[in-house]
Image 1 (spheres, rainbow, N blue to C red):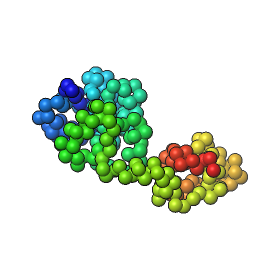
Image 2 (tube, helix red, strand yellow):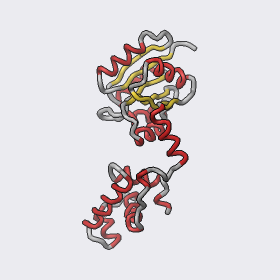
Image 3 (spheres, helix red, strand yellow):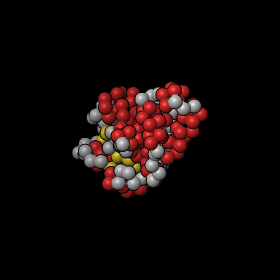
Image 4 (tube, rainbow, N blue to C red):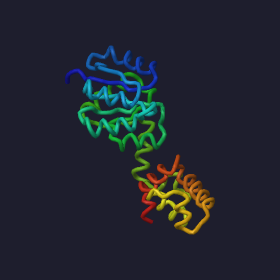
Length: 214
């Protein structure tokens, strides 16, 4: 196997430079570029066509997940390893759904990181041990997550279906013959029961777990 060309995308200069310094002494790995956000990462892939890009999750402007999705869809020759400090469930699954071939935490030692880069370049997928169990649990127990312990009421499910159609609170209230304040409270309960960050996140989780089909 020849030299593996690597790009690094992270909004923190110290992280970018630190990763580049860690990888520099490894003979079969070569850092060909660095980016400070998702948009720069996509541009870097276009310019340098790296074999593997190490992608942070949280970056200003275009996030690492969005950049991963675009790179995997438009430039499949570049494999993405998400390298982050977060083992949050949604970051893991959003990154994998976006097409990432690997998900590692930034506390990985250099030898493990180098091995992961080689494995992903060879066509394998790599998950940090800290998140592997989460993926297995979600795959084998899709409705066993804590957020599903409290089921939605029929009215909340009805409101959720309308949310999925992009209907506003005022329109939901008119459709269901409710006052808007009641709808707002209902939406708040839905977000809480699904542990969702916002309406869009709630709808995505509901679709993923089949709640809109019940």
